[in-house]
Amino acid sequence: MDTGSHLLLGVTLGGLAMAVSDPVIGDPSSAVYGLFAAAIIGSNAPDFDSVIRIRGYESYLLHHRGFSHSLPMLVGWPVLLTPLIAYLFQAWDHMLLLFLWTMAGVVFHVFLDFFNAYGVQCFRPISRKWFHADTIPIFDPVMFGLHLVALLLWLLGVMEAQAVFPLVYVLTFLFIGYRILVHRLMLLAIRRHYGVGGYSFLIPGWLPHRWGYVYETDQTYIAGSIRGSLLKEETLFQKGEQNDVVQAVMGSDGVRSFLAFAHRVHVSCQKLQTGYKVELRDVRFRHGEKLPFGMDIILDDHLQVTGNSLGWKKKLWEPPFT
Image 1 (cartoon, rainbow, N blue to C red):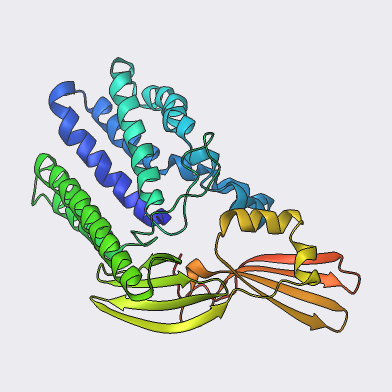
Image 2 (image 1 turned 90 degrees about the vertical axis):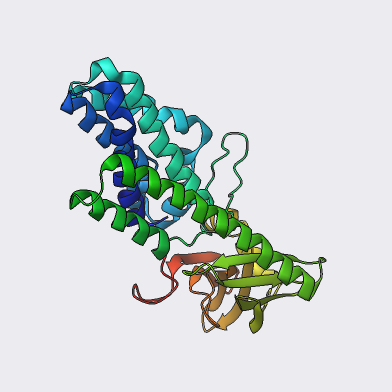
């Protein structure tokens, strides 16, 4: 999910930590605040790897949501962070609770990232594959609004923490379960329409009944939308050319990094005055007839790579909002 959502859900998870643990700890307020901080920090710790962006977008794409979101780091982050939190809040007597709530934040962060379209390498070192359940958008306004209302109800004194935070997390997991159910029903609708021979995947929209889809054939990607039970084809992308120019870029480090992340790619090639330009586009991030996320590679007349650019070919305020 986006950073703002992780931060907000970390705060409400901290509220849940206080609500559940307050009877166990008793009155030492510093320890309770420590649990609050542990949940917030744990909920954002996996994204500390964003500092890799200073090495360029290619490194960011290759490493973000990688090892920091892996199986070892589900425990590694709490091991690293718990002593620091215990020191800051002088809560050494409650190290186990601090550890558990820090881990809860880390696990919940990775859990949410797994369910959106961007994906996460959550099963490293067993597998370096990117996993994405394509169920929740990177920013989910329903979930964000639910947690914002819960936080305001608590801050304004309308509801006690012991009531509002358990309730909001029950509703959150029910909503995620509903999203998963709708996702399965939408996939079944696509397979009934096109058959089961090709590969299909969904792109979650902001509202649970609105989704995009891509159906893959041998030569094309058929893209469309689903609104409730209505399926509508909107555009078609050829998979692209396979020629000597395209083959010349496939072995470069940047392209290998991109292809490890983007499993369904539209390829195009054009002749320039001084060489060639190959465009690779990730079809997961389609908006209308545009594929704004991808990589451009420039080659000379001898098919030697002379430059490349990786990232979004759109304005910040234009969709898709990732």
